[in-house]
Length: 257
Image (cartoon, rainbow, N blue to C red; front, side):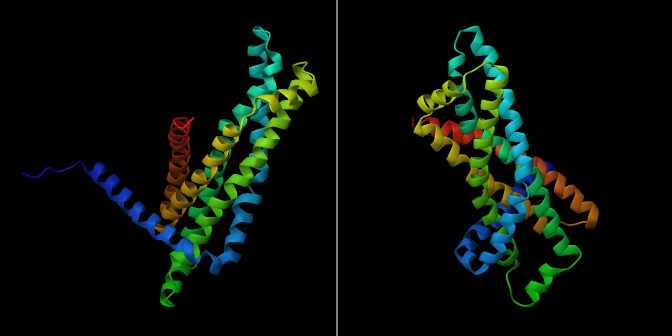
């Protein structure tokens, strides 16, 4: 007796399997990354440096909002002097990495689909590389995924710093906190494990954003309509991946502390 699965489940299972094979080939191509270091640096500039203003605006806004929210709550318990500690821990461990991941998931994910999709449909660059015996995954995909992996941590660190500085500004301007007490609270309350948790998450986010974006861009079909659908699906899946990874990594890391 054979069990026939619903078409949607079969399609999802086939997609997961194809994505796994694609990811395996991309990761195995990391050993050739030195050959394409110029392409990698170019992608770091395109995906990272150009996206930095958007990330900084988001992190600074969130930093000020967190300060105002925490400040009002702590004021009820007479613990406003803990504001710096609470803001810094929240930004470094959770808000900074997640906001950065979501911002880049939307911007970089769609850009990867657009670039690779255009290379397939308009310039036919992917087919041209195959004709010359060059693996398009190693030449086009690996530098993009590796760049996404590398740039996430530095951008997250910058976002964390800007978020905390914005929080300090809000605390001094609107919460009546002394500037020195704010920084002393951070210095006394921030632990090494907080920095470790905040540093482990971004590379995983970057890796998944790069893999998902490149997968849909590399396998896109259906012309411009298919390209638009692939870009939309990429943004949705990369954002969900960031949130799911956030939970999984947080739960895993906290089990060791």
